[in-house]
Amino acid sequence: MGSVWTCCATLCLFLMLLSLVCITDARGGGGGWQPVFFDVTQFGAVADGKTDNSMAFWKAWNEACRWKGKSRILIPRGTYMVNSVIFRGPCQGPMVLLINGTLMAPSDPKLFMSDHWIGFQYVDGLVIKGGGTLDGQGLSAWSYNDCFTNSQCKPLPVTMRFDFVNNARIRHIRSINSKNSHFNIFACNNLNMSHIKISAPEFSPNTDGIHIGSSNNIKIAHSVIGTGDDCISMVSGSQNIDISDVSCGPGHGISIGSLGRSPYEEHVTGITIRNCTLNGTQNGVRIKTWAPSWPSVATDFKFENIVMSKVNNPIIIDQQYCPRPNCDENAQSEVQISNVTFKNIRGSSSSKVAVTLKCSRIVPCENITLVNINLSYDGPGGGPSSSFCSNVRGQTIGTQNPPSCL
Ligand SMILES: *[C@@H]1O[C@H](CO)[C@@H](O)[C@H](O)[C@H]1NC(C)=O
Ligand SMILES: *[C@@H]1O[C@H](CO)[C@@H](O)[C@H](O)[C@H]1NC(C)=O
Ligand SMILES: *[C@@H]1O[C@H](CO)[C@@H](O)[C@H](O)[C@H]1NC(C)=O
Ligand SMILES: *[C@@H]1O[C@H](CO)[C@@H](O)[C@H](O)[C@H]1NC(C)=O
Ligand SMILES: *[C@@H]1O[C@H](CO)[C@@H](O)[C@H](O)[C@H]1NC(C)=O
Ligand SMILES: *[C@@H]1O[C@H](CO)[C@@H](O)[C@H](O)[C@H]1NC(C)=O
Ligand SMILES: *[C@@H]1O[C@H](CO)[C@@H](O)[C@H](O)[C@H]1NC(C)=O
Image 1 (cartoon, rainbow, N blue to C red):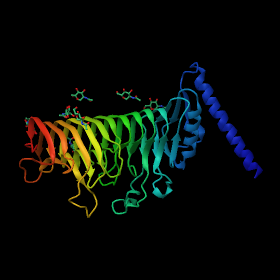
Image 2 (cartoon, protein in one colour; image 1 turned 120 degrees about the vertical axis):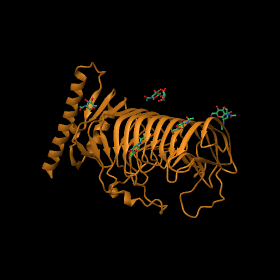
Image 3 (cartoon, helix red, strand yellow; image 1 turned 60 degrees about the vertical axis):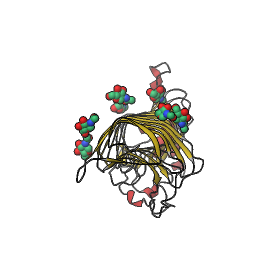
Image 4 (cartoon, protein in one colour; image 1 turned 60 degrees about the horizontal axis):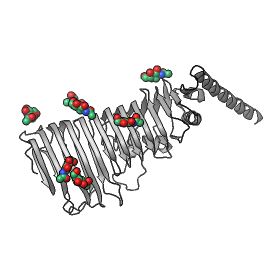
């Protein structure tokens, strides 16, 4: 017993000295203003693809978080097995996480006690970069997903969650084969993502690329996303979201919704989606609300300069969304959709109905504008594309292929 304690104490002392040395070294040349490096391998992390490194990562984060200055946590090249881990703030200074290596999740979903694999909470000032990879090892977990038939299902862990994170930049990171969503952004303000690569197979359930809710000033740019679910989805409380230069496919497209499922949902406003391409996706740009639904407001959306290639529903507003069996077809949504512009949207539809505007009978869509739409039908039998409208008021400007039903 005694020798175990001595050994432990020695190890602790050694680790403390090591981090001290590392801090002193880094401070040496920089007069205190240089960032201080916290290398996870100095906190016991081993890049052998087997050892659970969550404790080492957590220790490195906590040391860095306490440092009153710029901290850089380094995950060097190599493959690190990590169990679920949470990086919590507030921190004493801005945090940078450099992921140069590959993080690998355990494949067994039963090992996860929480809804995430890697989580960041209450951090103000965060940068994540480094060109590294997050490998969610979802393949063996996807068969556990029974959420379509079991309403009590236990959600599988999200690869990376941001909760109450402000002023953050995430770039040059790759995420593959998440068990659930790849990235989840909740209650965040001013968070920018760019040069993100996300991939999971077309058949993988619920593997949304980026899921956003209750967040403000979120920007996503220059990214490539292919998954089994939405490339990007935005739910209640998504406000001032700017998405540009995203290539999406395979997947279910870029979606606002589903909205209206719960009472007192926050409004969804100010979403701009520009310069994106969608290839072979189930939907292109979509707004969906439940029917029946609780009342809420969805307004001020712009979809601009979007190229579709063999997309099943290139432009779709669906206020009759009900993915379960036995839905009431007469139920109506109470989510009021207004001020939506679809502009310069071209390419091909793999179904005949390229434009679907299916709105609510009790709160019809108001001020929907279609400008220069050119979507041809590219599928069996050929022929022209068509559009479908119900309970929608708006106007058209410029080219309309399919002929507009507004
Ligand atoms: C980590 O990767 C970045 C970008 O690829 C590179 O600039 C940096 O030198 C790398 N750092 C280390 C310690 O490997
Ligand atoms: C995110 O991008 C916007 C627009 O370019 C910029 O104003 C803001 O400062 C950026 N935020 C961060 C945290 O870098
Ligand atoms: C979108 O593309 C247009 C034309 O290529 C370009 O002028 C504009 O800067 C782009 N905007 C964004 C936000 O990427
Ligand atoms: C769409 O994806 C298919 C299959 O991955 C690929 O062969 C094709 O070149 C892509 N088309 C465009 C326009 O990017
Ligand atoms: C319709 O929506 C557009 C774009 O969202 C907005 O600029 C315009 O003022 C709206 N018009 C009316 C009459 O509400
Ligand atoms: C739609 O746009 C018009 C004109 O800008 C504005 O007056 C109206 O309040 C907007 N609707 C909503 C629900 O914000
Ligand atoms: C619509 O797109 C087709 C190619 O898909 C092109 O040949 C045609 O010129 C376009 N029409 C307009 C008015 O831009």
